[in-house]
Image 1 (tube, rainbow, N blue to C red):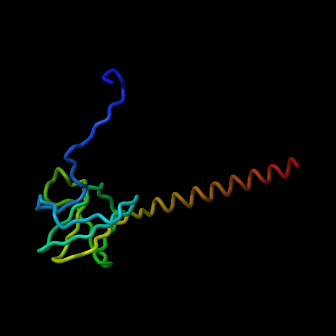
Image 2 (cartoon, one colour; image 1 turned 30 degrees about the vertical axis):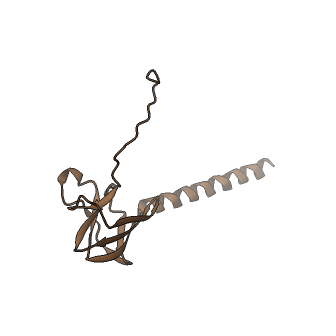
Image 3 (tube, rainbow, N blue to C red; image 1 turned 120 degrees about the vertical axis):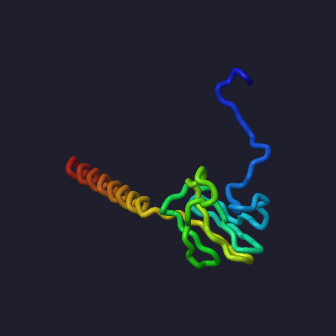
Length: 131
């Protein structure tokens, strides 16, 4: 209803969050896996092209084409979209994988695990002392 705070919107002509940088037809791209921190696309291109992923550019993103590591670059076509990333794809049919791994995330996880273990050990010692 019009008098509610929350409203729902639907994009009737939504574009996928990936595509060819210079070709607006976006043909020859099929997303096969779309998971947190993992994007896998099957692509076919008649000539070398840049594939963009509308995902925030971060140095933790890595990319592979057919299992071979490639450089993830900022979206090159338009400075307004420099927050996004792209990779250069050679001619032909390929499997492109983007994966996010941040060393800080791993470090934070270990700090949290060790802190939790320390808290558990301190609680047990206190419980044994009160006995």
